[in-house]
Image 1 (cartoon, one colour):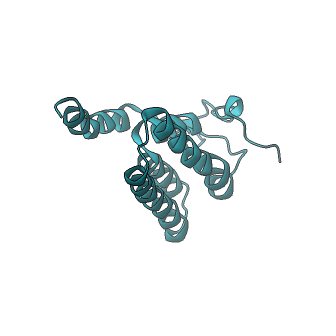
Image 2 (cartoon, helix red, strand yellow):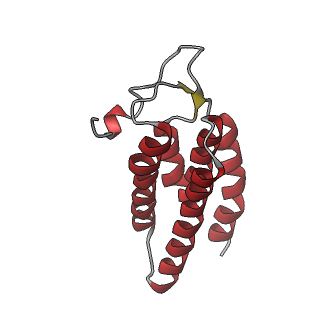
Length: 138
């Protein structure tokens, strides 16, 4: 089995209507980086649910997102993290979603249709607005 690289993330996206519809690996990658690993974990958990995964893997993915986010917040309270470091930590968490959870529970070579990202994008922006306002109005 060939390792998953960023360039190959959407290699298995197809237009076949018979293929399952998942949020793409690239979408999960960017959502986890820009909105946080917890958000990316939710998208991955939705994919797992659509793939017919049992409660255990879904709980593991969501638990990973929650624990990773809590540890990231805790660490940022100890060390003054700048935006680049935060994005870097999000990229590490996103890598776990991409290189561990996706191949294990969905399959590295599973062909799928990419679900539209508009609804998660709107939800992510709505969630981020209060945080952005708090930062700018501080």
